[in-house]
Amino acid sequence: MMIKIAEEVRKELVKNADKKAAETGQRFFKEKVKLYGVKSKTCGEIAKRAIKQISGLSKKEVFENCEELYKSGYCEEGWIAPNLAYEKREEFEEKDVDVFEKWIVNYVDDWAKCDTLCNHTVATLIDKFPKLIEVLKRWTESPKRFVKRAAAVTLIIPAREGRYLRDIFEIADKLLMDPDDLVQKGYGWMLKAASQSHQKEVFDYVIKNKAIMPRTALRYAIEKLPVEMKKKCMER
Image (cartoon, rainbow, N blue to C red; front, side, top):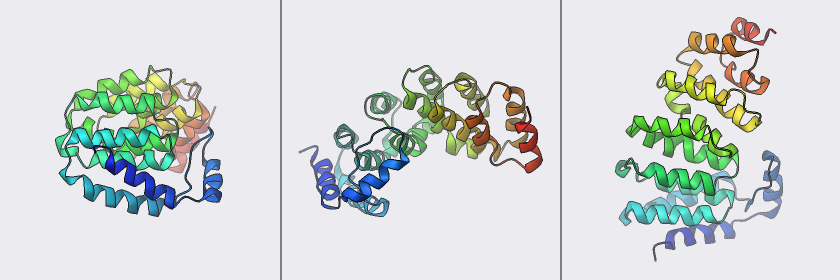
């Protein structure tokens, strides 16, 4: 009964599956992923219908449906799940970080699932309980690439708005020399977002660390900087 919505979402995805589109979609990922091959627009429409159905459910029931979706391993189900969780944002409690961490550790196995969950759902929880940023800092020490990426991409929107700069630099410091390019892209993206409100501070950070910062992270971080600043950052 409690996972009825997840089952209905899955049926709709199966009905709209396209094997050829799934094969094409694989090229966006380094790792092997499970795809139905359902278009983003169609996924959005399925998510909207599911959102209408969850209004009468408790947060616990919604989270159970989300977890059921994540368990399948399919990308499209992993994209819809955080949209359902986000609808319960007014009821978010500090302890919900344990639920989101469980999802990231156990089910998030590609960058799209990571970013879809973290950019809005996890970020909203952090904004509601800012001291949970300490949990993000702990995530930087994980052996799992997408837990480390989650530590950075959760702060993309706050970074763009000029918030949490000190914490952003601390997370960047912790991830600075990570050898994984998806982690590098994650914290580079976070720094790029921060540069939209704190241009000089991000420029100074990159200049200070450019000798050791992986080139992938550096290029992402300076993308929004003026040309002359970019040139100085790229100089060896």
